[in-house]
Length: 258
View 1 (cartoon, rainbow, N blue to C red):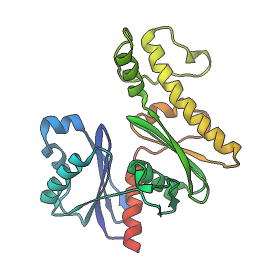
View 2: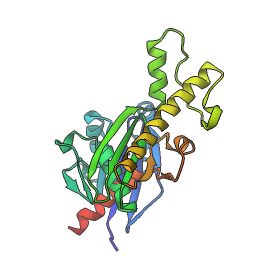
View 3: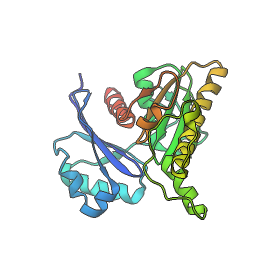
């Protein structure tokens, strides 16, 4: 069993999540919002982080400025360099379908690595955060392609900004969209249910197309809105809130074995 102790970061557009991989096991996950970091400084993050780690690996979609600042802070706190994951042509059981692999968002790549490591077989991997990404993998780990669409909150914000009298975005509810309950009788509810129906429809269509092509995918959901979306989908849905951290753990363990 590996004795490596790794600090892992999943840096999204709205939150930073972290966990420690210790002796092959992923520990308790912590998180903090970017807004709190702006208000309180990075001390609000490092107060929760260990100092004694062997390596630090991050998946970052928050931009280069954040990456540079985090590297400096972690360098001081842990005396370790922060390594940033990148989408690759091939690795960890997954083959990238992009002509230019580095153009794929690293969070998508790492989520696929995490899903493939746990489940194997054909997969439809959905990350439902600020944006919703849907990626298809065949049983051999070949990335067949993907979809990107606005997340639930972004859909509402777009309607509020670009129309004259629709209300601003708020937290999307988790009510049922089965049967006639799909339809709403207030504008607020219609916006919520419309956004949810759009996302669920895209996911269900992706799975249906994979099945029509002869694949038998497991549907794996992660991301901040996944817990609400899971309840709206038919059939078996595998919810993995920390899928990106699981992918980073697989990368650390795989690199150590090389």
